[in-house]
Amino acid sequence: MGYLKTTTIRGNDYNFPIYLPDATRAVARSLDSEDLKKSKIEGVVVNTYHLMSEPGTPILETVGGVKKFMNWDGLVVSDSGGFQVFSLIYQDPKFGKISDAEVTFYKSSKGEKRKYHFTPERSIQVQFVLGSDIIICLDDVPSVNAKEDQVRLSVKRTIEWAKRCKEEFAKQLQSRKMDHKNRPLLLAVIQGGDFLHLREECAQELIKIGFDAFGYGGFPMDEQGNFRTETLKFVAGLMPDDKPKFALGVGTPQDIVEGFKMGYNIFDCVLPTRDARHQRLSVLSKDPKTLDVLHEPVFNYLNMNREKFVKDSGPISEYCDCFTCQNYSRAYLHHLFKIEEFTAGRLASIHNLRTYTKIIELLRATLA
Image 1 (cartoon, rainbow, N blue to C red):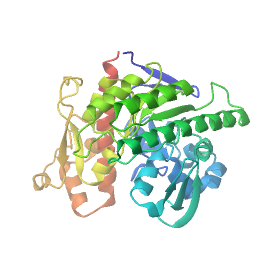
Image 2 (cartoon, one colour):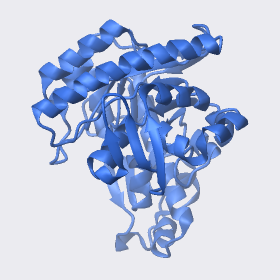
Image 3 (tube, helix red, strand yellow):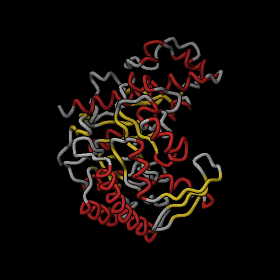
């Protein structure tokens, strides 16, 4: 298996592996763009459905796209909105309905009554307005409990929607006069649940259509919270080695290491910022100078609500060079959380993101 070490998008070179925090609504919760840069973050993932809903495409088009909107000059990947099909509609049919032709939302991303007709074509059009560097095809994400016939329908729909996405993508390139050097990449998502024969069928059909990158679709964790190692590894092996492989929704620092060993080179997850807001901090398991990142556990959790931190004057991690660790103590962060100060989430998020990017740096060093 080959491993893609770098790719060029719109004239910019990006090294792999890379971790992208979720900036769903054009913001990583509690952080600004400078916080992200100082944490060595190189790219973010935004969400097409949520941004189409609020602030809306007219505003984003007026301001010149999501990068100018959030003052971000790094990589931007836009999730198609496919996961929202599951998270909103499959869990609560009151949010909308799904057909082979389109997804109809009855509510906005904030739950307000508002009707949206969301098609594969519309998803691509909105992502061009966003100005994304990597555009993701609209896919049908089956329920975690879906039976084989339901997953088969999801695969069929994902393939058909991918065809329509690629056709619209080509139209947008032509109308915007974009050539190979200045155009975004188009990524297709491989669905199929834990049914490996359906994963293989989906991958083969998507490869025939032809895309710039491929992603693992669905949940990377099972209902017991275990990493879907067999399925993730199998899907990675189905993807072409000369194209980016995106492990969507992966994961903890250890999950990223395992995904890297499988061949994935792009990762995104809400965990570091979500955990930070809930007082759970990731710390390297040992000095990065001696850490064997491919063969040793890479991190541990610290729960900042523990009373033992009340008088702890040390940094969150002695091995971390983030803004938080260089300037504040565990005792201070414990205090901020205890008084429910908003700043606590920011400082904790900065630390967690730097832990992730440090592990990415260690993984890149293994490719040197």
